[in-house]
Image (tube, rainbow, N blue to C red; front, side, top):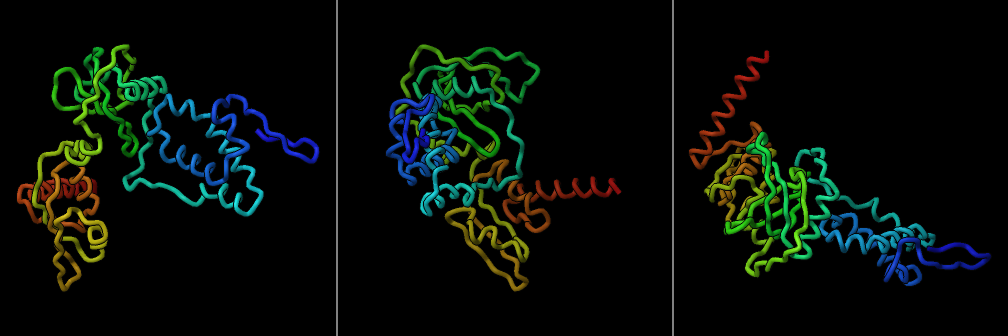
Amino acid sequence: MKRKAGNTLEWQKKEGASGVAAKAGTMMTFDEALALQTLKRFAGRQIPTLVGAALGGLFEVAEDRLKQGATPDGRRHASWHRKVAAVDNGFHLLAPTVKEAIFFAVSEALFSEQLLEIVYKPRSNPEKKPQPQEVMPLGLVEMASFVYLVAKRGSKPEPAMYRLDRMESARVCPEPFPYPKDFSLEKYIAQERQFDFLPRGEIKLAVRFTNGRSHAVCEAPISQDQTVEHYPDGSIIVRGTVKLSERLHWWLRSFGPFAEVLEPTHLRDEFAAESRAAAKLYARGR
């Protein structure tokens, strides 16, 4: 921590800072302070809780360092956080509360590779009193307003997902477990597509987009094998291989009357039935 002493500046250990944080004040550059601020802002939940606690003092020193940006370079570093932002492309929901003790226990068990005892209330049977269960934590995933734990339970071969806000309690067990060498969280998300919600295999999708909506899929393709057919009225037909899931349904519904599902037939029939049901609702409302 810096303080004025006559015409000089004195540095002393910031209260609560230790280790590298206690030494960082005199040597931390504006670049390093900005990097730490950005890390805390955009990856706060990806830092293990135990490590995050140890870095707390360092984050505070970095924040103080940026506040000292009297020089042009320092001023630009200090104002950078007001010039960048991350925006979720979905409808904004208020994030459900995750108890701090639960997040700490889950993060600690994941980092230490120890078994975790949780009491979890699933959405499928909210009236049933949940019982404690031991799981092997494999990964944490933050998606939109929710945080999920990916974990294996007992002898079941496939991992399951647990939303942290549905946990009534979490306790780190003393027993360690061998983290599976063949498990990759990145591959689990990309290949299994569990976070697409209720994945049901691949389909060959064909959708007609009306004029003015083509940019949505021309600039960000739906698949590696996407093809686009252009028509004189400005509409396009997009074809590609995608995962059939609830997330796909949500995405297609977001276009309303400006997207028409052509293939597969069963998906077209499903959307047609939904459209008829919606039309009846609005007709009754009048």
